[in-house]
Length: 250
Image 1 (cartoon, rainbow, N blue to C red):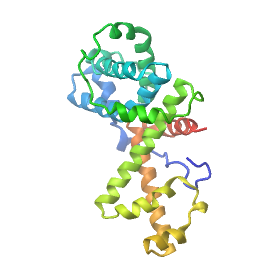
Image 2 (spheres, rainbow, N blue to C red):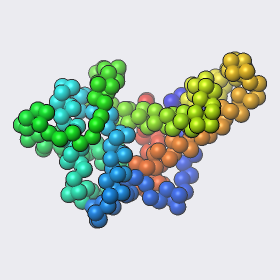
Image 3 (cartoon, rainbow, N blue to C red):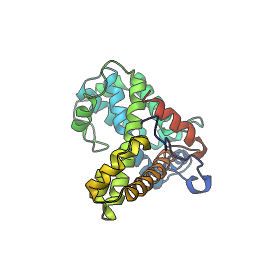
Image 4 (cartoon, rainbow, N blue to C red):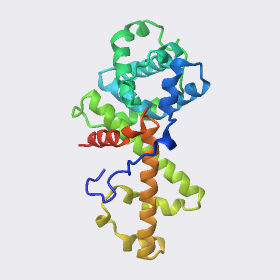
């Protein structure tokens, strides 16, 4: 994300009453109750953020096939209620919890999982590993440690999810073409936006483009904030989590 962006990061004055119940708070409560909602919330989080986990395992030196087996075996373990019951209070961030959990899994579970017949285990989540492998091969080579690659992939996944939500909203409002023309201005400084050129392409006045981009950026910040707090047990940590994620691009 461009550090010169006028609207650099989302407003982080998160109202606790709005976001008091997040995906991660629901999951953490699962250790104290048999909750179908917790299982659904955890699966949603895993489906969203599984690629950073895959990238971490690959950067650890595992082969594509081994990484696929590992990720499925890890999710099988993660989705067990007994595992969730062991969540500790310090895991206020799903990102931190997932990284700690997979490190523990690699250290203690991989040898046992690897002794199972390849292909004999149950597929826990249907995931597009080929797309993940393609994406992995365009990651910076030998420049990022597994931990840093995990955080970078997490941040990119978060931003991509926000853009997809914004795209869907605009498509539903009949503004799909307009969004595709203007989405590139979400992450650059306002002084770098060629409003007049964009207006000419969209048959809009420069002023109308300025207003539209401003609204897009405001909604982008709102959605980004929403996505971040879903991975936190305390919405007040949103600003700190944002800084940590943006540091992944440094």
